Image 1 (cartoon, rainbow, N blue to C red):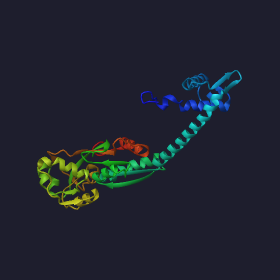
Image 2: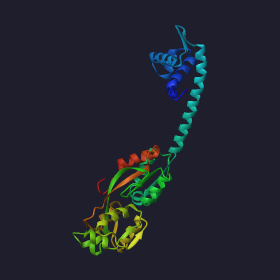
Image 3: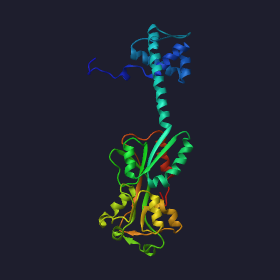
Image 4: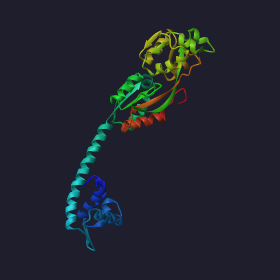
Length: 313
């Protein structure tokens, strides 16, 4: 058969449903009984048998008032059909095993802020839907999260940065904003007008490390004001940054999610900032072209239904 006359196998071989019907006819000796077994009408069953006979070019079933019997060709085709259906059943069993393996675990990587302040609620809700799924969580900055997802070491990632690296698809799950906060005794705490971007940029701050989404957003927001001064402290966790600010060491810049309780209790004071946009989007990320499935899909769905923050997301 030349390339010009080649016809796809799916156009030459009866579909799986028709082969199952033929096997049911052989088993029951009745077209109507086979139709009932498969949950279809007798006219539909007759139509399928005729279509299969037309496709193969041979008669498969002799119909009579006493029932339906296979022709000699039908017996031979039925034997082949049985092998095809058995292979399809093995295929289906293997696919179910793969789905079970996929659904038995979920590897999540998340930036520090999302891991500390949003993921716990999402994972509790996921546990209610999938009690048998074992979840592992790796918390790190946004750059590390992206690396783990790209390396297929995580099924789903959550990042805070301004951009999504090549090789990843994403969905916005929440809006957030950065807050400049100081201890009540700091000179900025009494400023009704806060600080301008230029003053913030020139002041040594308590900051997250480079590669964190918080640092990326702040760097971009203050680039037009000369960029950030050398940090007063550069710390690798949100909790450490907050603790340093609470001690009175200096101003910090963190997600509003991280300081909402401290601001409400006046343990920290928010300092308004003029001339700099400190809003950002929180995103879920996964490898390009590999839309999340199973528990990763369910977790992604939960983030969109349950995310809430002081910013009203």
